[in-house]
Length: 341
Image (cartoon, rainbow, N blue to C red; front, top):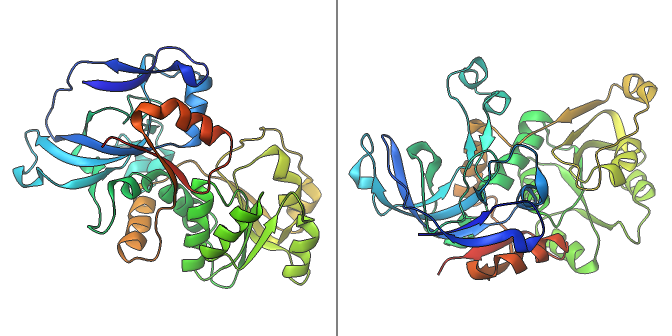
């Protein structure tokens, strides 16, 4: 069997198409023949060198395929099902898991970082991780959903408690989480101000439902936000860029506003004026991945046709190195997908 693995951290050439042993099923597990996977920025960070990654490591977190075998404890009727992979791992036993806050579980992990990932011809997962998806969805679309959808839902709905009528500022609208965040915010009845870096990307953000679109290369973001909100500011800032955008995010925040962040692609350092924070009763919320309820909430919206995965480009799995380089170039709008067909 073939799989994409890294044996050491480095550039895209660290990705190797290896022969590995066939996986073996255990109780309550299923074998999935992979048809498509998609990339996340996490894949790039893992490849470059996140401490503690078990090497050699099969890369990738998001995937879709067909169940071809089942272990004891799983109904045979599941064989042949088209499924997407829920890539998060929880212990299922601790107080956090019992309260439905699995993302606070000390054992929380993610396939393709803490354990072997999905970029293989066949993978084994727990039955609960193999999620049927709507018939109208392609394998490529299904492989583009899980991680960005539950991350965005967790940020906006579970952490920031987004309300109808509020203003949301979406940084990085062209990213996987950004393109999903626009859609979820609109479903919740918010007014969305989306930010991207090219006119083409701004146009695509508008097609997803953003009410106002700003180009950070040509627009004065702070002034535009003040104008669009009649001086009030932003209720929820959807932040995953980090150091380069942090000051504007905080300056743009309304009284009682919330910044919710899941990443820091441009750097981890941030300045903070504590006087503004407590005087304006603002909140800074960290958010990592999602919980089972966040995945289920996003999946419900998908099944109802209210949100959809956004695919930018599909590469054959044999060109995974080029796909990584393309994602690193920040040229995409939405997800970069790998096809196994």
